[in-house]
Image (cartoon, rainbow, N blue to C red; front, side, top):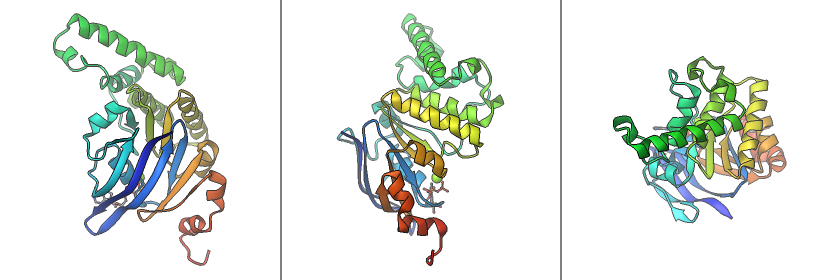
Length: 254
Ligand SMILES: Nc1ncnc2c1ncn2[C@@H]1O[C@H](COP(=O)(O)OP(=O)(O)OP(=O)(O)O)[C@@H](O)[C@H]1O
Ligand SMILES: [Mg+2]
C-alpha cells in the first residue's frame, strides 16, 4: 500500500520553480531517499508535504486523504512527523523534556496541564513521561535522559530529535539531512537508528547527501534537480544512472 502519494506538485518562489511537477509515491514501511544537488527543491518538497508551505498546484495524499494546504499541526496529528535540516531542540531543557514536548501534540491535556493541575491532566502527563522514556531507551540514549540537550554532541542531539518526532507517534517520518555535520561514527549510529525506527513499522522519507548512508538503508531513491524529478529506482540503479552522474558532477561532458 502507498502511504503517501504526491501528484504533479508545483511550487514557485517568484520566477523560480523550486518544485516542478513532481509525482511519486511512498510504500508503507519502506525507506525512500530523496537526493539532489543544493537548491534542488528537496526541503521545499518536505515543507509542502508537512504543511509549512502552501502548494501552487498538484495534490498530496496521505493514506488516500488529501492533505495539501492543511495546517502543519493537523497533518502531524494524522501521523506525519518531520525533523529539520538544522537541529531545533530546546537547548536548556533535558533530553526527556524535549521528547515530552513532542508527545504533547497527542495529549489533550498538554497545554491545559500547565495552567490547571487537573487529575486527568496529571494522569496524561504521567503517560507522556512513560512513553517518552520508552522511546528514549529504544533509541539507546536512556543514559542521557536527564542531561541538558545543548551539552550533548551533535550526533546525540540528532537522535534526541528523532526521539521527539517519534513521540508524536507518526506513521511516516520525514528526515531532512539527518547526517549533516556528523562524523563517520555518528553517521553509522544514525543509519542504525533509522533502520530501528523502520523496524517499528514506521515509513521513512529521507533527504540526504551522504551517499553511503543512502545506499545502505534505502529501498528506493528519487533524484531531484532544479525542482524536477530526473530519476527514481533502487539505489544500485540510481548510482549508475548517466543523468544522475551528470547532475552530480555538474559537467555536461562527464
Ligand atoms: N521561502 C523561500 N523563498 C524564496 N526562495 C526559496 C524559499 N525556500 C527555498 N527557496 C529557493 O528554492 C530553491 C530550492 O530550495 P530548497 O531549500 O528546497 O533546496 P534543497 O534541495 O533543500 O537544497 P539543500 O541541499 O541546499 O538543502 C532554492 O533555489 C532556494 O533558494
Ligand atoms: Mg534542504
